[in-house]
Length: 181
Image 1: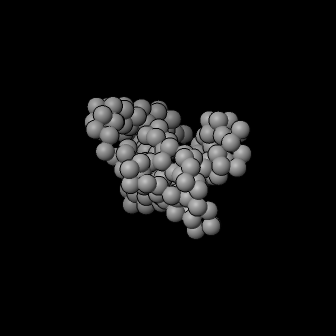
Image 2: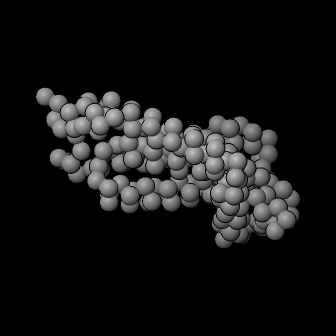
């Protein structure tokens, strides 16, 4: 195992090994702990629904959630979007953080980028839910397509953009890998 972390191992091999290990760790932790427990997913779903409602209210829309169904975003008193566990963004945050952790850099810089990137992805997800509620209210016939394709594309494009920023913004000479000449 120490060979994988050696500076003489090809960067691609190290990245794939670390990314695979982090994925397995996430999968085991989620499938055997966080997922069945459900508290983190529920809390995040509630927070995303409430933040989307607040954002819509800030723009003058009659959006709300109810204490009896806090994951249901309502528009003008009518159900619009139910923020379920698959749509609360948790998997996106884990995917983003896993890539940044697998890619070489210093700990402090990596930590700040994971925090800032996760916050950015949270706001992208909140905006996605808010726009989906508007979509349901005003153009309901396109909701299914937009939910499954357009908004999925937007979320993953945001992740790819953050990854590109991460890989392109590292100070030169601080890659964490030895030169393979």
